[in-house]
Amino acid sequence: MPINPDAVGTTSEPMENSWTSKDCILYALGVGAGVIDPTGFELEFTTENSMDVTQRALPTYAVVAAFGMGTAMRNIGSFNPAMLVHGEQSV
Image (cartoon, rainbow, N blue to C red):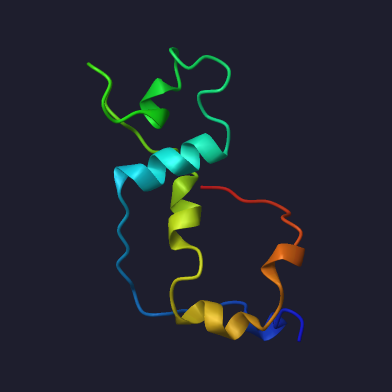
């Protein structure tokens, strides 16, 4: 079954989700943070134990952390997410 167009506008109950610093670091490394200059401006996304560097999460991590949550996703239809073409996203 393809994506259900009738699912547009579906809402769900609020849900709570949590993650650890390790999850944020793995995501940052997975999208290539810290590759260009590991001692420069991206260090705060890829470390948790560096002196005087407070760990931060990439803003796009919110999309990953929330993916698949809620009853609204159940109405979207059955399809293989690996075959889904990613058109656009924003935070």
